[in-house]
Image (cartoon, rainbow, N blue to C red; front, side, top):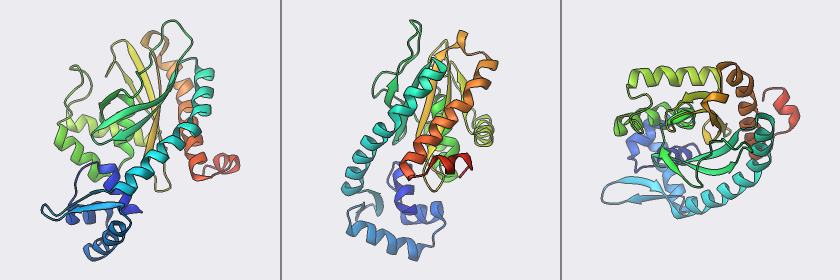
Length: 248
């Protein structure tokens, strides 16, 4: 499954060498496992370019997974919205983009909420930082190389060294915070929904007008965002409240 997740998270065709390096699986074993995945149509191989991509069966499973993800996430996003009085969203990765899969809007007249299925570069904003910080380092490095961190609307971090430092901060504290990186006058907090391998299946984000998101307010509600993401992950993985309280 590590190989399948790696190819899926990368979102681009990959050679055997890249897959082996990115998963720390030797080439012979990786080739054998890829053959098994091909047998079940979970990956496909281009015989001319000699690269592997996600197969039709995996895409079908991904569609079913997103349906389950939305169902499991909705009550937690609603609780997060009610506790914080700001808009809560669930974001997923699609190739080099992140997409707002589901949102629960704040009730304030002045609110910040992404349009349904709206997309942005995978590295942009708080959600992007949460994805990038927790994906395999080889994947984030490749995304930085391909995109050059081209800023959205001339905002956000575009210098790779500074971006890597910010990713380290996000990993340490478990969440990302940005102000105006994607939407002027808005602030966002985001935390990853992790799978059993510690990779991001999705990201929970909370957005609000900058005037309501003071540093003190962010410090107060950031743990709520992390908790919502952890509970969605626990539901997906079948964990219990006891597991959550013990930090499992």
